[in-house]
Length: 88
Image 1 (cartoon, rainbow, N blue to C red):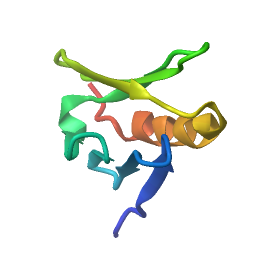
Image 2 (spheres, rainbow, N blue to C red; image 1 turned 120 degrees about the vertical axis):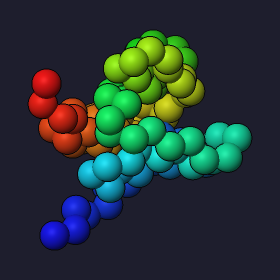
Image 3 (cartoon, one colour; image 1 turned 180 degrees about the vertical axis):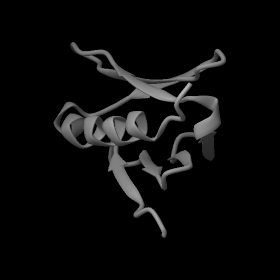
Image 4 (tube, rainbow, N blue to C red; image 1 turned 90 degrees about the horizontal axis):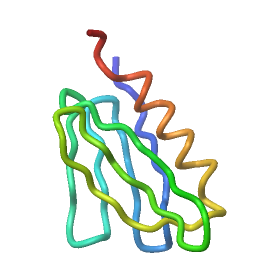
């Protein structure tokens, strides 16, 4: 069974996708891939310049700005990503 691709734009030029195994970010400085075994999760800051941070379970993170009107779609992707993380 194939998991449907979930897409959520962060800005007009940055797109996040998740296929159930790999979170990908397109449009920053190329493509960034985070595998589910790396335990990525999304955190959001709010305010004048909102930031999205991809935090990895083993350490490391990747931050970039997002458009506030896209927050609902990004949260939906974050929820799907959280449900896909392996049980410990």
